[in-house]
Amino acid sequence: MTATVTLADIRSARSRIEGRVLRSPCPRSIPLSEAVGLDVFCKLDVFQRTGSFKERGACNALMLLDNAQKPRGVVAASAGNHALGLAYHGKLLGIPVTVVMPRFAPLVKVATCRRLGANVILEGETFDDARRLAVEIADRDGLARIHGFDDARVISGQGTMALEILEDVPDADALIVPTGGAGLLAGVAIAAKALRPEIRIVAVETAAAPSFSVSLAAGHPVQVPIRPTLADGLAVGRVGDLSFKLAAPLVDRVITVDEGDLSLAVLRLLELEKTVVEGAAAAALAGVMAGRCPELAGRKAVLLLCGGNIDLTILDRVIDHGLAVDGRRWRFAVRISDRPGGIARLTAAIAAAGASVREIVHDRAFSGADVFSTGVEVTVETAGHDHVAALAAALAHDGFDVRPA
Image (cartoon, rainbow, N blue to C red; front, side, top):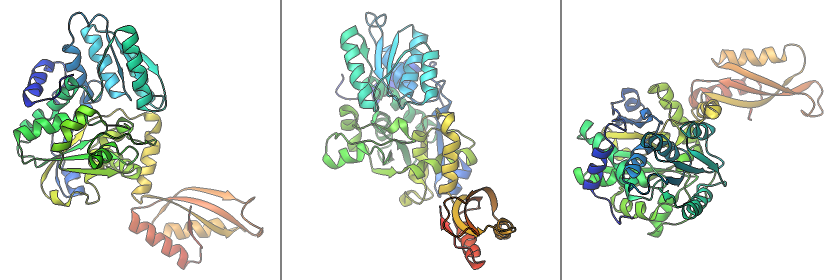
């Protein structure tokens, strides 16, 4: 493996993959700019054929294989997007591809990889479990292993995003980069800092897998425990050795976001930008919400919306969670009279406060010894956190003992 990656490597990668990988747009977003107080641009790599930036590194790495290796094929471990990029470009180039995916990989990514002709193996509960099996398969079958983020060829390919961004937004003040294994972060930072040394590189990771920030604190890559996360593409327990070495000196700030932040960011992008992204890509917006980057107020920041392969079977849950985090959906428990008119009095009070009832669930059997009252759990649609507080106050004023459910 090459010990470093340079701007020249990234420019060569761009020439190599040109015409095979989409040069994605990077438009300004007026609604997001208004929402977060920055001058926001969105690098839309969600428009890639397989829905993710990972095509860049995968295509570059495949094209750099020697002629003796191409017929034997390649193997890689991936939570999904790297596998998709390899499967798609492997098919186009006639190179057999085997991908090992952890069992939590979104079903849409597994199905798409198989449809593209890859041999898909599901193994383990974490990315590291999948990686270990990929190493075994490479050694056993003589396949070339293409690491998803700790490979100079892949890092060079990912860095082509920065070349395009700085052509479209040459005076960008900051790049906001979702970060898991740090391959994208390394490639983008190398290219951007070489072309504009003053540009700020902001890495955003999930609290469920804070491998980059923990490694920065230790001064070297560190294994961290990971938890289930909406940002499955960032769920890496240990950053790459090469990617960390390259990225660490170039990163100006690391922001860690939680699951509520990610759900709310997915919701904001759906509503304001009309763009569906996966949790890993939403991390870029989550990183600049809630005033997390006050030093960038009013300045030009590019969000790397790097993937759109969210599993549709969970999208409705993500939206519901985002609405709850945003104060636009609230659930509370309350006791009411179990005589005629009890429910009517409660719903009238809710309507008077301007909220809309979404669901009411009775609990007569386990609501206590008072058989003339019943517990109910109510879900309402509200306009935001201030409206929730006003509704709670109005219900209390009307004599209802309201408790968050």
